[in-house]
View (cartoon, chains in turn brown, cyan):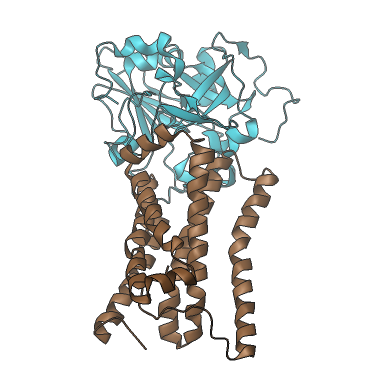
Length: 218
Length: 272
């Protein structure tokens, strides 16, 4: 789900073998880290440790992690610019996909656990409650991004068109945070933090872009 | 409350009540650890963690003021002495679309209020929660603390309106609104104000906390109504805590027979 023009990385610079090995180690580490919240949640579920309303606890936790990982994915490019560590870019896509995975589980938990496939009720909720509308829209916008996340799809679309498509995250990201802001009854501090972080990370790209007079390119 | 079910009731004799439901009661653990009591934090687990160490439920007085012949500040034990304690099993429906079934111990609100002899000017009853930052941190901003609620006089006098001092045969835990709280089973849970220190008979509809915070979301009446949606939550179904599938929400939370007459001729979409 890369949104910027940092150059599409197909993860395949295999000329230097030690660097490649090191990189796949980092990749495995990221996968493990991203699996931990899900494992903790499942363990708590099995242990019956999710409180009086376990369905709500599952949905909230999955949504939280989707937002957190989205923030991390969006922070990769600014971090790369600030540190000058070009290799960071190769981890962006997998973190973005993990953010999508949590968003998809969040959506699935709503459909299965919360509404139990009551599609009519889900339809009414989408129309009537703006926080559901925003959430559904954000998720729908992430679908084409996830679907085109393979290297084959990047080649097929061409880097430029792929990048343009993936700028949908500029809409999906803030919408996901707005979904959370509109969901809370009072105290919107935590969802506002996500909103500001996401907006800030997206704006950073805009600033860099305008300074460079175009999408940054090597 | 650490006392188990086997322990003798701290209340002595509790009268059997006609208000018993043929529904499974919510587990005591859930009813005492999943609470909205924003003075102690915004998460449902916060009140059970924070309230018991801060709230001092004894000694406790209730001040009864306003349009009545015999106002006064009354000690809690004296306040509830007007009627025999009884156990009532009521449905509790939160505006957030979850529900519980709780066995409360207490006295009818109407009986407790009658002795203060409200005058004909008393059209409403206003309730106020303890206002002491040491015992109730009320850290979350945006609200006009202390918590306030209100009922129309005829609602308050309805036999279903109840003042609880206990649940599950035990003294009310701090997180559930110790030492005395309102229970209005046909209204959304936020109407059932906790840890009451002041009751005032008034002529005008009183200001209430949620209504002043977001009037388009939380009405003064707040009757459980599956036909009127909250902007955030559909109200036609609810999740009963402990159950998987949502169940349909009943008009007036299933208490229509006793309370529908209070609202005859009223447009409940307008007076939500």
